[in-house]
Length: 167
Image (cartoon, rainbow, N blue to C red):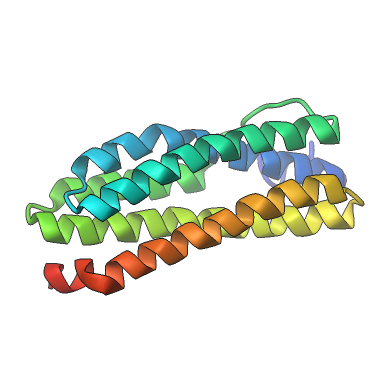
């Protein structure tokens, strides 16, 4: 089912489709994080990525709760956007020889992922409220808050030394 598919007829259909999209995205992110952790050389960056992998597992569980609360099947649909972001991250990381520059590249890639998640969770939270699903909105908002926090931590790491070392 594509975004502009005839299968999406109502706001509820659109909400469920976007839930399926971010569910796929979270599962792909969870699968790709070990490779980023392995490539990272800065201890704080490694630790932050490991912590976020645990958080991502919680996001997947929380999404499964939202599906159930909403009475929708827990299901993923392909998300070409996250596939592209993760593929680009992998390509860039594979091209960087300098370890300090690699850490800066990993932060940039991780922030691209966070920004995608922030857009999806922000939209889903608003739609859940519009659909009268305060229960779903509360869970989605919790994840949105965590995504903003993760992005902030990455910025702090970059600005507190990783970018300077890479330069």
